[in-house]
Amino acid sequence: MEKKENNTNSGNFREIIALLKNALAIYVNEGKERRREEEEYNLYKEQYPFEEYYHFKEEFKLNWE
Image: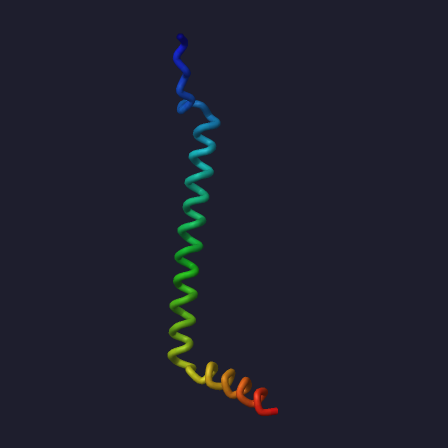
């Protein structure tokens, strides 16, 4: 019975690993960027809380028109 060769030394395997590392780096960076944007938005909402009030006010007016 022949033993199957392990292809871990092939160039194709190295390319796949390199692509996986790049994909993981992109995924991590996008996650960091998303968290940063959420933090900035929350800081904005703390500084300008009236945006939600104005939106509610417009909806309330529409109900009575």
